[in-house]
Every structure is written in structure tokens, then in C-alpha cells.
Length: 312
Image: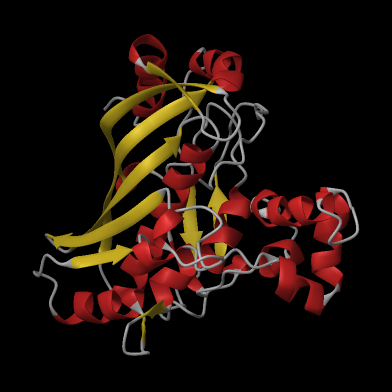
């Protein structure tokens, strides 16, 4: 069987060769973009942690557990020395500092302040109702909070043949101009919703990602949702099946072109195995120590500058 990672490398090539030229809204950075693509990773073939560059697995695990908590404040991430969301929390603080409303501080100092000062973290570490909040605490017009994921887990156990197990992070009440002033998310959900399906005793998951940063973001997204599939399979008692990754706008930023070409020159190595503590059967009980990656032998990491998107 052809190594599943070639799907990722071939999509990189597709974008470079066929992508339409666009420009990012906030920064003006050039983007090459294609629309409507799909990859499929059979989880029996190993855990899809890309090997053509080293991927930050600890960050992936910590971020996913943060989502599963229904949290929307970066303090949990910062406390665990994961800084992948710092840019979005720092952006409004930096703007307030430029307007003279708060003291100026570098982003590293800002993150340290989040870690050490609970009140500061409450005020400046909040990202609004992002992914985990929508998954676990979707607010309704009648004042309730819906735990979409708990509902899906319960129904998967009792009615595996049903077709409606969808969890959505796309809540128009908190997105762009549709939100009330000051109520929008820091960034509208890029990985928009995911759908579970049971077939032949195996749990499959399909993600729809409306916007995909192919070089920096997608390697994280593949591993994160593959891990989510493994977790939900263990919790519901099914064997893991496939993770299907469906894209809307999938793109490469102009300041990543050289890095992408370097990655495309590398030949994939065997995928590792993800071991999960078999004693955990409650989705709320997992901790970072419950996950162990075995046999991961990647090429060295390739650095790329993140583009802090969002806003309107």
C-alpha cells in the first residue's frame, strides 16, 4: 500500500502547481490556494503523525485535552508550556498597549504573566467561545448549555447505525459581524465540524476544515483528529477505523514556499503507533501522561512563521 503521507505531499504539490493566487486579509501575504480536497488515513496503518518533518506531538495532545475540557482560556496551555495559541491572546493586548490602555510588554512576558497571575489570565487569556466551548458548552437561546460531544458518545454506544453524529464549532452568534460587539471568537473555527460513523464495528471520523494552512496547521489537525478518533473509539468500545480529512480552502502562505519544497523532497518513513492508557473510558478523565508515541522517527523540523489571521 502506498504510504498514506504521500496524500499530504501530493496535495502540497497540487497547491504549488495549480493554486490560485490570493492575499491574506490582514497582512497582505500571498497565498496559493485550491478548493475542495480530501485525504483518508486508515488508523490501522499507524498513527498519522507526519514523518517528513518533526511534528510537536506534546502540543497536539495538550491542545486536544484543552478542547475536551471545554476551555477557552490559554492559561491551561501556558501552564503546560504549550504556546500555540499565545499569538491570538496577545494580539488584542498589544493593540490595547499601542493605545496606551495597558503597559507594553513583549509576547514572552505576556505569556509568563498569564502563567503567574490568575486575574491577568482571566482578563487577557480568554479567546472567546472557541472550539472546546462550542463542543462542550454550546449556549442556547433558552439559557441551556449543550454538550455536543457527550451526546455523540452516548448515542454512539446505544445506536451505532445512526448517521447524525456531528459536532459543530461553527456558531454564527460568535463569528465576525454576526456577533455582538466584543462577543466574537478570536478566530472563527477553521476545523469547522466533525462527523462520526460506525461501520463493521469500526469508528470513523470525518473532519470538514473550511480553511487549512497546509504547512503549519494541517499536520497538527491530522494528528489531533486522528487522536480524537482513537479516544472516542476507546470510550465507546469500537475499533478505530479511518480518519477522513475534507478541505474547503486549502492553502500555502508565500513565506512557506521554500519550506514546503524542502519537505516535498523527503521520502516518508513508517508511521508510529499511538498507545493510550486502556483503563481510561471517560472522555473527561484523560491526562497528557495517558498517551505514548512509539516508533516515531521523523526528519528534522522545518520552521515557518505563523500568520495571525482572523478579524474583519
